[in-house]
Length: 118
Image (cartoon, rainbow, N blue to C red; front, side, top):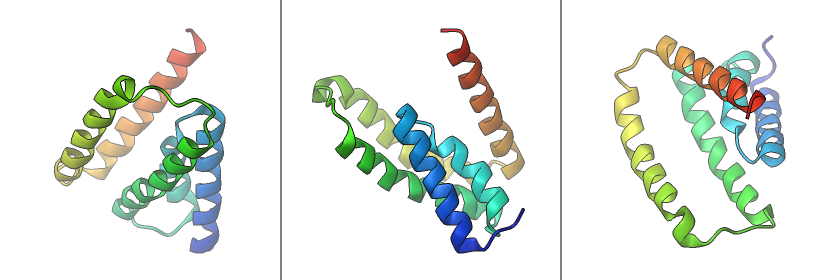
């Protein structure tokens, strides 16, 4: 189902924001499939758009959260995320898009199964 590119981006962004707001994470998991289905973006553009949309969602989530963990608790995750964010774009250029889609699908299924049986 192709929708006007502008509306597809709005719908995908709203869905990602809602998922992130409700569950505290996971906005990116809905973004990639929705951007692929609702817009005419090329596959490599979908992943770049997803990353650029996630940043503002994260900032809004940080501002809206009632709990701020101590900096020393989250610092290792922040540093690891920065390293991963710097390395991944250099690595992803060498991975076929089909494999990226499959890896994302596996991660979504694994996460869903993991949360069904805590």
